Length: 107
Image 1 (cartoon, rainbow, N blue to C red):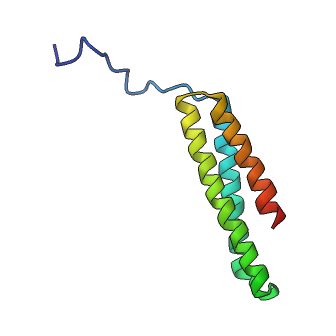
Image 2 (cartoon, rainbow, N blue to C red):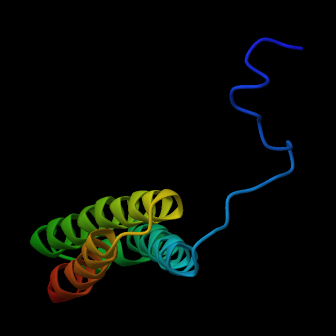
């Protein structure tokens, strides 16, 4: 008998952890927000830069930077929610979504 086989049997290689529906939804929202930030950054870089003043350009870049960072945080929360479903993590995800809309949307 292999060492440790009786103590903790390992699951089959194809056995997967169940993905929580909330975690999947939050992960999808984070992916869409990251794609949107990427598209807006490309649009600004290639088409809008000549139409913006230096101040408007700086504000737009700040909004994009915060959207990227908050979306990455949202993606991390989705990964955590897959491991441990917690109402505190779900509230943190809601607050991050609200922060993206309120902060990045207001700039």
